Image (cartoon, rainbow, N blue to C red):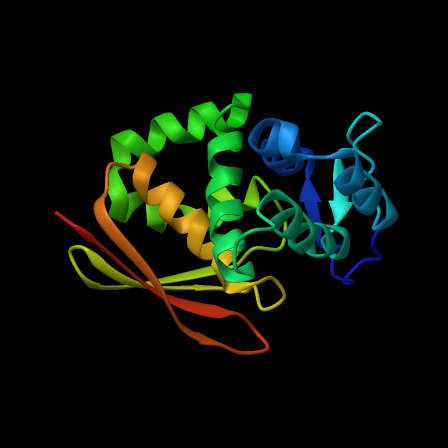
Length: 187
């Protein structure tokens, strides 16, 4: 437990782990990947813990991308991994509820709720959304550690379930605090 005034440990919750590795990737989690994940602190042979340190998640993501799509460029693999967590998360109890809400809210309001949606997966996510038009936003997330393609895929998957058509997600900049994306879709 963190001391009074001390920041809480940054963690990823089991719903995100379940959504990505058990539901989303499923059979793509090979015995080799399972061993590599175990070595970084994510043992999928045991019942999931309630939460894992962010450092474990940050180590697991590139391993998963490289193993699941070894034939692809690592950037493309990360985009597919980001989409896969959305697809897998939709199969969890919490994910079903959030996906249903996204369909009702539509793209702009779904993006506006991304901080709280992402907080269901991890306690550390911070998001800033800057609308630049009815179907164009600047989306910043405090994720400088993972490949930007991962969040790009996550955003693409979120837009898709919210009913967005012809969406594009482009990386604008990356620095030591996070990544800025330009997100657009057709009305």
